[in-house]
Every structure is written in C-alpha cells, then in structure tokens.
Image (tube, rainbow, N blue to C red; front, side, top):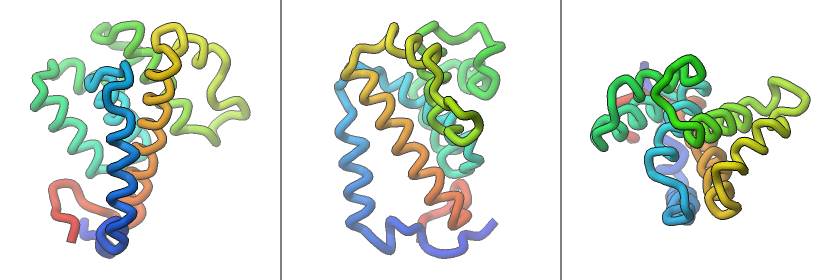
Length: 152
C-alpha cells in the first residue's frame, strides 16, 4: 500500500504539535501506560489503522508485555489475561470508537464499570486518550498511511 499523500500533520505541523500536546496532557493522571497502550491497540484494530496497530503492538512488545495479552486484545472478552480494570477500559474504548453502532453507544453499564475502576482524573485521561487514538486512526486511514513507512 502506498500513501495517498503526506500525512496531514506533516502538511500542517502546528496540528502535529497540538495533537502531541493533547497526548502529553493525559500523562500522570492516574492511568497506567499499559492501559493506555492496550486501549490504543484495540481502538486501532477496530478502525483498521495499520500504522497505529503496528506501533501499538511494537510499543507493548518493547515494554515487555506478554504476547498472550498483546494478541489477546482483539478478543479480550474471551481471554483470561486482563484485569477487571483493563476490561473496563477496553469496553469503554470500544464503545467510544463505535458511537454510531447503537443508539446508546456508551451504555450506563459500560460507564459505571469504568467509573468503578478509575477516578475522575484517570477516567478523563482515558476518554481523551480514546478520542486522540481515534483522531490518529482517521488521519492515517484516510491517507492510507502504510505501517512501517515514513510519513513523507
């Protein structure tokens, strides 16, 4: 696959800086890097973003995450490898990513379970993280940014 054009954040570098600033704003808010990375991988899988799926896989692998957990993200409901808090974050990530799939995309049940595991700051960081993952996925998928390729 070949990219249709340069990644939009390279054409508009101030956009790249703004997106990076948003990503940096959620650090140290009570949400573990592992949860952020697991949710990022799942959101990217749902959106079919090859770049983010590849980067997410590699980041988790480099961090020493067990291969069963990395591969298991795609079927996390059926896998025994995730904590209740991670499952709550993955469920929220899927719901926020699939807003148009059902009338009440983020059900009260999904919300309550996430809120049970994360305080308001961590939950806010999780929501922003999911939103920014979706932005990156849409940018990359629209221009067909190939995995493993440079952005130029």
